[in-house]
Length: 286
Image (cartoon, rainbow, N blue to C red; front, side):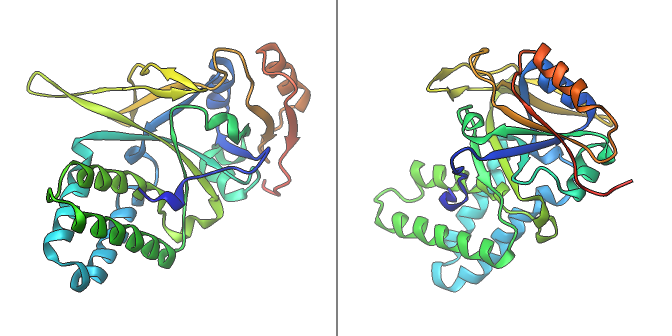
């Protein structure tokens, strides 16, 4: 796994989820965040960028590590989608970025919900700090591939279960690499893996659960929504620990959103999400 991509928040750090008004209503009413199939997200390069970096790394390491070793990693990375489905939700370290308002919050008519990062990280997820610098992406991946190679050289079983698991982890963590054009987003990507299980002549999805708020957590139901004519899998996670905490620290109202801050305060307080700071975006956008 790309350990350097694991997100570790500083004390009292807030991360922001941009959304439209309907998503804001659903999140605050249901007190759940949605993790959706990563490869159904808006950017086409979501699917390909991480693999593009892997191909570059493999080419650069070809002479040093050899064809057989790199081909085996490529085989496992390429087939990783048959082992599980990566679902994710996206946060930003900046709650008032014009490009984010345009792309993810109904062209500035939506909201940015500020969550206490350390509370969100108690969910059964893996948090990834997205890296946008292509050279740094290549260097990071080269370093971990060399570590895997060194360990593999010391193993008696060639390409055994530990090797397979390491490659699967690398495949999932390639989601932490994004095109440099998206640098302004400062994204923190919250990820979770759904499992495939054989069903009749094909497969179905199951959530194996994990650890949430220091205790074992059962898997969540697999839900679907339609994106155009394609069913997209997602799960929802309760971020309040069954009503014991409120991780929402602030809400930023979009630059084209004319709602009164007092209306949002009343809405949140009525939904038992109390003491939330309400701010208006400072972005100039009409």
